Length: 389
Ligand SMILES: [Zn+2]
Image (cartoon, rainbow, N blue to C red; front, side, top):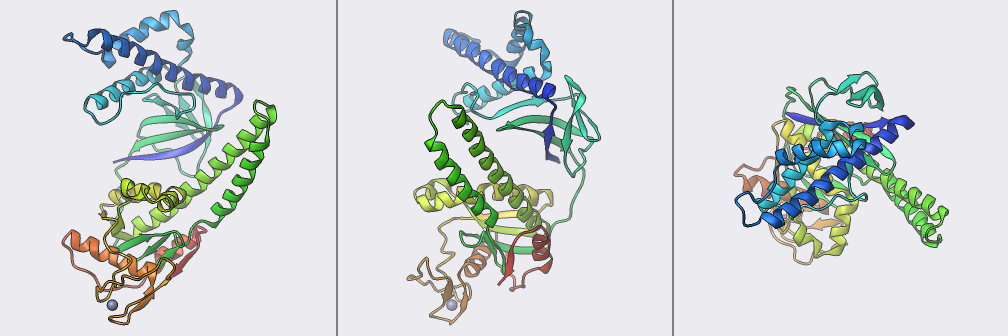
């Protein structure tokens, strides 16, 4: 199984310059050969050989390096890898999976790939052209069997995503839960576990608004404006980091304790029609959470069951199945007029989500088991606010 570990790099000034050259040169090579492949395709459309492939462009790259000597400062494997990626982009386009390949912009994702030649020297990561090693800090140790490293830049920080192979086979969690994702609570699980949204995030968002307002008052093109742009970008970066950390904690705890998790499908098209729901999905990072949950469950041989968003999870009584048509968004408690059940609205929805999911995959519905205290304990230890309903 391939796992990824992302560590922050702390390059010295000289290394920073060389990292920038790598980012820029890989983008240059990608764009240069995209242009060549575009022209070739336009001229040879009706020929037997319609397009160039990765091998063709690699031969051309060797020629290019004779003229464009500054490219020799760059790890040649990283440059070649840009051509492999360009080739992938074309293949994916020809298979009609994606749009026609675009030029890479300075404003887009900044990265380059190191396919081999790395070594971990304790607190330093050695990659070709950086033989003295770039300092990194992380609690985890970089594992031996590295497959490839992707170096990225985010505002003014550098990271290495280390992809490695592991034989580790963690145990599948025992419980089964349904999860309701909400705005008031980040998640409510069918066993009563509730995780509150990250409060610190809200505070950061306030300061973001303040700084954005300041930015709007700065004169265009001024040095002060540039400084303010960096300030705003840093806050964005901080919010992203906090959210990622939060999502990691919640998804890890759930994947560890539950083998079967049912969740509502975040159908984009259906959701985007409702602006408020769409906004809270992006704000709360639900996509990221779901992605993490999915792969962490896979690591443990667990399963994520997705159900349609429009199954009546909130309006249905989780005990007798009758539908409450007049349930308002402001009703925090669900009162069933048929069987008399009184239950927290989100908990009722979570139980329904679990049941619908289990029926969908042909499994029986388990008895209600109270929240596994281990999950709640683990999350509060990680600094998250949890409640049990
Ligand atoms: Zn009922």
